[in-house]
Length: 344
Image (cartoon, rainbow, N blue to C red; front, top):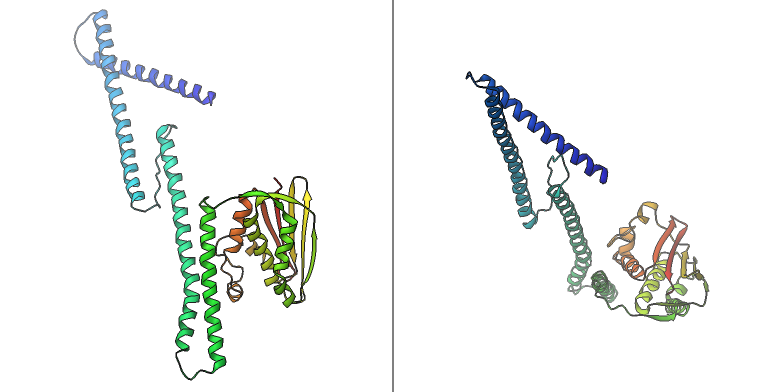
């Protein structure tokens, strides 16, 4: 920065030196063109006065040009700001300014701001589109089967089947609403965050036992290895993490498959690995699985009642605790989720 400042100072001095030489050269030529007899002293004085006058005019022209250029830039900024105020974020300023100044910094900050606003608007539009899609699908099913139940020629078995579908889709809507409220609360940083010391191994074991009807129904083999470990965290929020990941492992592991859950104390961290022999996730899908509403397989996920928000909530909760979560998977071979949390 010092070198640039010195170079800038030298260039300014050269500019003014050139301005002085140019001014007095012009004044000298002007005096020479005047066909009036005068002494050398008078000619010197006249040349000096004319030189100062020419230098003043040239300086004024340069200043006027620069001021008009800056005025044009400010007018363009005002027009762009009015567009942003009206909701049009797809605007940018592009001026060819030779030297860095407060004005160029203003232009850079403005372009960065509009770029961020446009990205937020794109996310908002995508979010609304995803919500509309997720709500519309179960509503269509509910309306369709409710209309079908109005026909008197349905058998008792058919009526019960339709009622079961309506109940399933209603629960799906309820779960979507609940997850949206959770995610909104977590991202607003207004969600209650009550960190305290509790037994992490006991919590994970309790959740595994609570899921027993699900994994026994599919005859899954569970291998559990949990170190005795206490952690300082929000117990209720962390319960959502383990419930979501374990449920996913059970849901996407075929019958007679295997799930391994381990908890290890590594340095100052708790490392939890949940591995299954399920259907797996492609490498491309692994890049997006923590995005809101993303589903590795739309049809498969819908059939199992998912809405693509569970892992977004999990990631947010883990990050709130200063931890990390990663997923490694191979199609047809299974998935391993690794959660690392600071103990205190």
